[in-house]
Length: 68
Image (cartoon, rainbow, N blue to C red; front, top):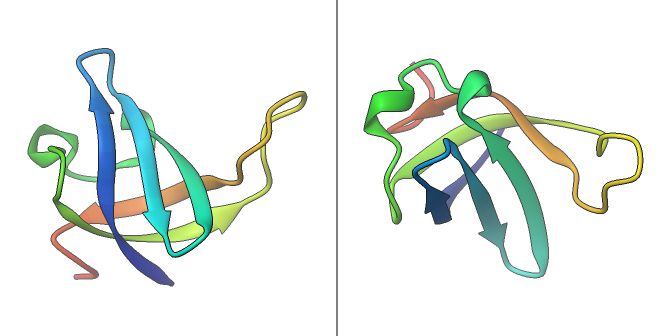
């Protein structure tokens, strides 16, 4: 399980988490409590490979506020 903060968040329910030099794509469908997703929110997540043709690994099974 990784932890970071949401760096960008779109009204279209996706954004990015940045930890040091690593960038992870986060989609609202992968967040247990997506209504709490805002820029700067702490998030715990697992890492999955990037989607075909995409660059960044995905944050999946994410929980805003840290692991519960």
